[in-house]
Amino acid sequence: MINAGLVATLPTSTDAVPYVVNHRLLQRGDTAVRVRDLRSGVETRFPAPWPRDFGTLTLSPDGDVMVFAGVHALRAVDTTGAVRWELQHGCWSAAECAEDHTSYSEYADDHYHSHADKGSVAYAADGKTLWAHIRNRPGAEAEEEWLVLDPADGTVLARYATGTIGSSFHTPHPDPAYMGLTVGEGDEDSPAFWGHWDGENLSVHRLDEEVLLAASPSGDRLLATDPGQWSLYLRSTADATELGRLDADDAVPSLDGDRVGWDYEAAFPSDETAVVGTEGDYPEPRHWCLDPTTMSVRAQVAYPFPIAGPPRPAGPGQWLTSSADGTAIHLWTLA
Image 1 (cartoon, rainbow, N blue to C red):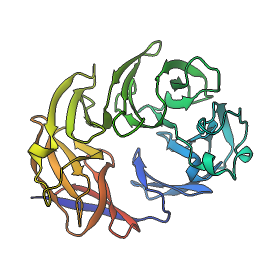
Image 2 (tube, rainbow, N blue to C red):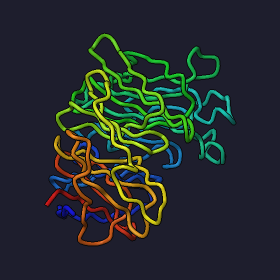
Image 3 (cartoon, one colour):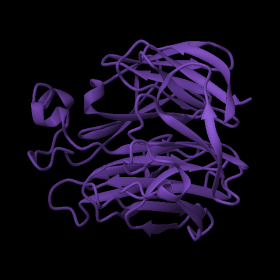
Image 4 (cartoon, one colour):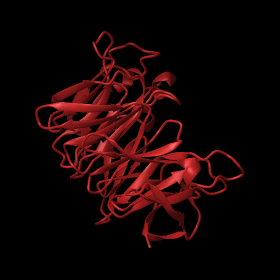
């Protein structure tokens, strides 16, 4: 066993899963997003343009702009709720709707729109570009695209047709030129994309049947798993070349003879250590300290009290878990 050292416990007030972006804890409600700076303790709020079931969001590195990726548009707002810019796109409820929406009010009470697929958005590390996965309007050449945007006004700098149909999430990288995207298209089909923007050209590596988890703090390596959660993969971030892999069945003992599978979330607190979980463990989740240089499990992580959920990124040197009752998160480091 390797002991986890408790850094802080922070109360949570919404049903949405809280997460950390650039040393800030984000808690999404239906009418507002609470942002707590983990270094200063200062808390701010961003009015939300639509309820939390209608999309995803991200926060700028400076903490002054929130970008909401909604059913019909990307919208950037400041802490007063003032709109910096908006980029309208096709409806994410395309299976049920081919309308060219201009406002959330057009579908606010519709069940299918509240259960639509969800695009995603993420800032580059330096905040100078914004990456977004959107669905295009009916009749467009590409059904879904990955965009590189100017975050000042939403101008599209580059486009890449993903050839996908599904919800997504981004995997940030410490080098602002790189970004990861995973699109979920079903249990056995979940392509990932590793993008590089040099200021003029966008190049993308497609990784079939892969789910990106986290990048190392130095940015040299990338951790991923597959949709079936059989193996962990270590990749070079320069060109997405596979550097190693670790099968769950070989690395982790099973419980009651059940198959072991890796979680879809993980943390990479240092270049020498990743913290990964195994799915379906009962009565408590099991987390493992991984040596990425050898792709081997060092030991199970021991917590001083019960926790819930997978390990999630919380910045260099740390990761976070939820409390067993869902009312708080805990920040951890290796003791």
